[in-house]
Image 1 (tube, rainbow, N blue to C red):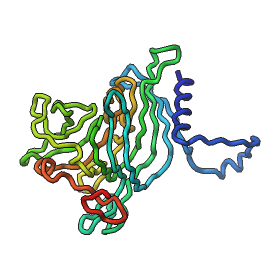
Image 2 (cartoon, helix red, strand yellow):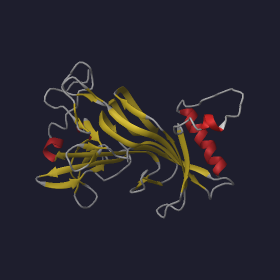
Image 3 (cartoon, rainbow, N blue to C red):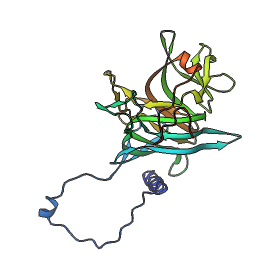
Image 4 (spheres, helix red, strand yellow):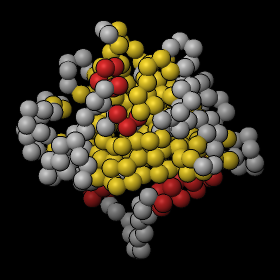
Amino acid sequence: MKQRAYGYAALAMFCLGVAPVAEAELEPISEERMGEVTGQAFMNIENLPVGTTDSGHEFTRMTLNMDIETRVNIDDVVVGQIDGGADFAASDVALGHIAREGDGAQYDGVTYAAGEAVPFEAYDPYIELAVDPNEGAEGVLSGFRMGFKQARGSVSSNTTSFSGDIGLMIDDAGTLKQATLFGADNVATQKRATQVGIDDGTGNCGTCAPLSQLRSLIVGADDGSGVTGFTDDFFIGFQRESVKWQSPDRANVIEARQGVFINLPTNMTVDMSTLTGAGVPRLRTHQTDLGESLF
């Protein structure tokens, strides 16, 4: 199974455009020269122990020792398009933003003034494979995911279909409630949801709003000081069957259903009247401030 997993690892890295090729004659290095070398591997591959939460899969994770600070704009994203719908569909997707006058952001003690770029920060990107060792002679790939061991920053979009989970709190007249995703039929779902709101206690929508009302979200964790901290639970997974993924620090277990699954943890609390009214405003994602307009 390990050989099969490493084969999947090589294929996944190649698909991401990370396929280094080198041709060189190998020569021995003296102990003196080896003693002068310090550093760490660019990529770390590890076979993870099977946890009690998911005894049916074996996991292999490839981590790149990279630091990323970026601001990206993408016109359209459609993933998992099949059976007349899509697991995720959004337009005008942006990572990172530009601070406006009076709404500068604070991350790790840094305040960004109006006009300054606020990057999306990501550290140690990884690809993780889940293999079912009980299928076939060498096991079968059940799913893979791409994520970061640390991530924080803004994600903006006009989302019309979402599969996964959004870690968002809703202030309902002074009472904090966990946000729930709903389909067009007003039933709670993590598959191709179109609405977000509050569960009425029966798995149905009590008060809902279109997902497009969430124009910008802040990915990250609440460290208790009012500053957005890093999260290790931001990932996108592709599953042939349900897979229980563990956080890199093994503190949380997140079950991703079949198909595309996006785990979007935030440290935000949104007022219900805002969600059903004007909606969460979009952050400035263009060099020229277009206000609420996208073009």
